[in-house]
Image (cartoon, rainbow, N blue to C red; front, side):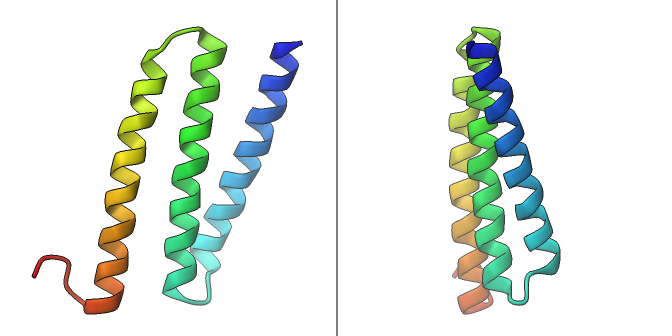
Length: 89
């Protein structure tokens, strides 16, 4: 039963990632693209955690934490660049 739930969750998060990728490519504004990239990071984190549950190992949880940190820093950097035109003052 858990396998069916994991497959359903993989399909849902995969579809969400593809829709976010579509928004990144066709977003009308830069802010929409930044939000779509941030949502893609969240979907990738969820897929990594699901894969860790499926494999029964904890290494994917640590990888998801690394992706979360990199995703947060990249979102802040994109927003600062959009607002100020410079990342480092």
